[in-house]
Image (cartoon, rainbow, N blue to C red; front, side):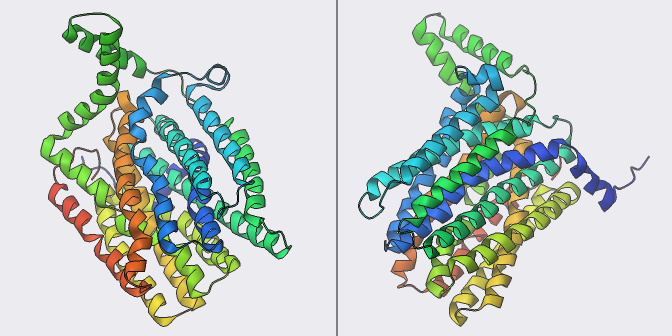
Length: 457
């Protein structure tokens, strides 16, 4: 008996699930800190007269996202005094990290970048660490909202998580830029420092919203982890503080990695990791320097807010939802090939903008195309790695895969400013090079596309 193919309308109905609203908020909580350490920090340093290279290298603070899997087991196991009991394990960790970010913004509001650059970057690093730690729990809580056998809901949830992330990042960026410009026009000298106080209020509102996100009751996750510890302790042949510590480290960090390689096979697992590492490097190079490029070509903060943030948010929301539908119907792998081709073409639009000079129309077209590309690429990527994780190691395996992807985007893209300087400010050539960066990841994906063990390809 052949199964009737689901219509586009039937597929779209998946988004009506109330769990999607919870996932939307979790995504926004995850995306908002990037407003602080990406857009706001970059433009703040630019307006203080720091070089492109300095701004680019300051982005190395994003590197902590590439290593958060190392402490994911700690986040999975250690309970926060008072918060865990009152809010639940996942929400307790999120609230703690939000408090740290809020306190960091208060410190930033007193800092002069040119006089205290090291302190400013250090506080930015603290925000990045808190955000990366928060992401471990946010991603785990998001995945745990959906049952293992709900493949289409997982793809829809991935889309909503991406919409939420971009909502936190884009709308947060709109607020940040307009508030900074408002304070600047009022004649406030330290307008960025004052802006960070306003952004702190948004964090407080997000924490209020978090209280409406359901945290699933305890699963057998910890039971399975303890069983793994006991197996390792049995292999060690002793039961003391040292053997218990070794069993903990091996079981919670080594266990998820071993599980991943056993499930996929060594060569396919390496291919997956290679693809995950390389997929969005070109986009990251473009994204790291984009706001500097917009400023140099002559756009104001208000124009950047409207075109890059406000208009970009609307585009991202619409096409992320469409990307989720495409991933549900065509599969995540086909969607990633489609997104990879779009990435290459989109980066060329920025090259044309650099060669032709300031043009609001071309700026709008390039931003829309870039956001369409990012929407398709991100929702497919999130759905892809969400389907790969073992529920016994949700936080750790997802953090591992996500952080490998982040490693490519953050560590390599930190040289983006130096690359523009090396090209003597030739933005057109820079964007052409970012186009070529897309190709290696698609080669990796092509080599493993028929051998990956996920539910829907």
